[in-house]
Image 1: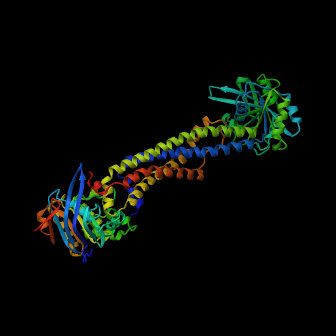
Image 2: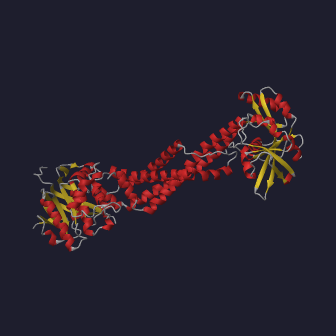
Length: 228
Length: 394
């Protein structure tokens, strides 16, 4: 598949689950391209398929149909199916995840949490981790544990963790859902800055106001991207 | 940040549970290490004590030979006796260097909470114990027992009686006799230190045992003759039991080996139980951290990474438990030894437990082996958690 320099190129991507004896079509032939530095917002209500789309693009789940290439790695297409090890390596090297619930490890300090993805690369660059935490405005919270941080601070740590291995793509699954409006805007602006610096971002949200601030807005409903 | 550090920090998520598991591992390692150390120390101590005695054969009245030997060595009253006319005959046998008769009698002093052991001996006994020295540095000679009221005191006996001067009188009300201290022995580190030595004839008279003795301790010109001379003694004195000290040592060791096998079986069960404890702790931890494991996978961890993390946690848990257990065993060694000595036959006087690096290594390897085995199933469970489901879990 020719990606034309896109970080993500998905064509006719579908995902069908089998649950409770019935088939659920979570994604129904979506097309998606994200260029470096592009801030793409996936907008839709709960159950629309946003998280499924992020999981498939991030290699956490496999598509049941269509073609998908991420950071030059063919995940699916033309009968090819990436091995699990390939998907792990893809996430490790090229993708960062941010979740609504932050998902920090409670017994680790902020710096240690940021360093976790480096463990899988047999690397440890504390200087980079501290630099990233300063970048997200947490230079005074380096050695604090998650229970000593506010929601916004925890999300900033999670963001630094997602960036530590220098990914090409950031997948953000409703990262502002549990934050107050002010903090939500701060986090969003931070993401915008990162995007401006060349990071491709796929941002899932049900917040229309936020969505309007993205470069590209894809409205997802019942697993289908609606035409604008 | 390394995998080991992450494993260590993860264990701190449930400190109480981690601590309890470490305590159970530490307890089993402490018991295993104490037993291994004690066993080696006991055998070495017993052998040394036997060798120090300079006795190759012991002639005692018929009965349980090991009980008799134990009583002769440790002090105690044997209810049956031998006739002292056998001593000369034994001394004349080929291969016998020294035949030293002795008559042992106990005086119980309940008001003082002690039992004094009086040993009637002659000059041959002093020749047999040629390493004995008086507290003034001299070698004790037969002249110390010339007077019927002579009293040669072991170091501990003198200490208990608070006797320091030669010529001091000591009244023994139970036998209405006054002795004169002729010498005090330097400490030997054996049971000899606790005895009161009096002339054999005096002991026979005082305890109404004229012509009778408790045992004859025999030193041979060549220890290799022990079996041969023992056979000859058995033929010559059918009413006596002949004990070869070498056999006694072997029998004691065999007895200890049997007890040890039983104890080790119990320890194996204890270790297995602590292994199940580790497995349970790790499995619960994996179940509780399902979502966390999903997050780790999302950050790029592969199945092998997750397997390695949980396995390392299991090893860290048992490793810390093992280290704590070894420390505990080392600190509590003396206390444990004093308890064990109460139940072990012929326990050597000197320390039986000492830090044995080989035993420590065995314990460390054993417990790490437990950690490795106990960690396999939880690690597999963790590695096989489906990332998507893990991220959805509460």
